[in-house]
Amino acid sequence: MAKNFLQNPSKLSSTECSKSLLPVQDALYILSGKWKLPIIIALIHGNKRFKELHREIKGITAKMLSKELKELEVNTLVKRTVYDTIPVSVEYELTPYGTTLDEVIMALRDWGLKHRQKIKDKK
Image (tube, rainbow, N blue to C red):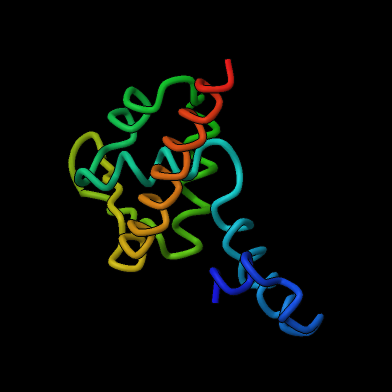
C-alpha cells in the first residue's frame, strides 16, 4: 500500500488517503519527540537501569527521561521492573511489542543514511 500511495496518489480516493493518514498520525503521536526513538534504540541492546539510560542517551535530562519512559510504558513499548533491593533498583526493557519497531527503526536509519548522502553530494 505504501508504494502505491506514494507513487500513484491520484489512484487513491480521499477516503483511502484519510484511512492511510490516521495510522501514520497514531504512530507519530506515540513516537513523537526527540527522545523516544533513542530510548528504544538503547533498550534494543538489553535491559538497562535508569542511570545507564541517562548516561547512554547524551543530552537528555533525568526529568525528560523519566517522562518519556512513563509514556513508553503507558503505550506498552517498555516494561519497568522494580526490584526489592536496598536501595530499590529499577530496570527498563523493551516489551515484545516494543521490538516490533525494529523494522521501522531500520527503515528510518536507511532513509537517513541516503538523505545524509544526498545532502553531502549537493555541497
